[in-house]
Image (cartoon, one colour):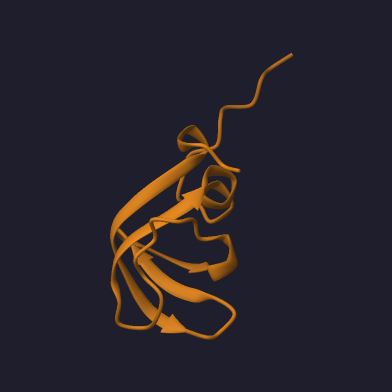
Length: 75
């Protein structure tokens, strides 16, 4: 199970399109395709037209460009 340190919360997210496989959402000024199966408890958006909170695992947020990746370690 994912603990609080491994998830990110995004507020005021708007669902633009629901394709059935992904929700195309506006998160701030970024539009991303979010797979509903990766959304975590606490998410309040479900279908086109919804506005609310999106909870994602950190790895998914990074893949979608919603979270910064840690800097690469130089050897």
